[in-house]
Image (cartoon, rainbow, N blue to C red; front, side, top):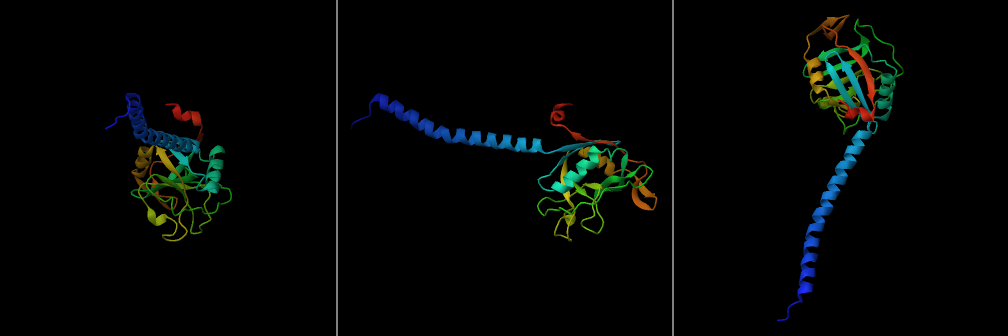
Amino acid sequence: MTSLPLKNNVKYAIDVIFLRVLPAVLLTLGLATGAQAAKTDNDALPKVRLDTTEGVITIRLRPDIAPRTVANFLEYVRAGYYDGTIFHRVIPGFMVQGGGFTSDMNRKTTRSPVPNEASATFGNVRGSVAMARTSDPDSATSQFFINLVDNHFLDKGVRGAGYTVFGTVTDGMGAVDAIGNVPTGQQSGRADVPTTPIVIRSATVVEPDQDAKP
């Protein structure tokens, strides 16, 4: 039987190794590129930091899902509107709501409401941030709430128009849980008001380079 020359055998072996290794290398590069793209996309999303009396809460906003709601929220933040407001409605096992009253339970003046942008695919799960509103779906102004648990009955299409989810808590969910466990009572004709005010000391837009700082 005729055998291949040694030189050709070596070339054949190298070709086989290359063909076997190449797909794995390409797959690894593809996964790395995909992960980097996902990280870049997340980094490009705006973030807001709430400094509260129970700790700091960082929210990543989703203008790709609720553009008008996010723009409205950022306007309030940049105007300093939320500074000194409180979480005025706290229901354990449900949600914490804030952004509309001062510590003496005076309602703050708001701008015009924004249209409902609730999405059936981006719902009210634990840690998501949504807009509070009246029975009118298009009545949201400044008040928002953070879901303590999955509240899918608030999603679009379950019981109607749904509540617009426009962000997610990425850091500080422990502070949110702490707010959700404070004692509450009635005040100024409202139920579920914390007996000791939970104050938003400041709300600020997080600049990209701040994420790397302690």
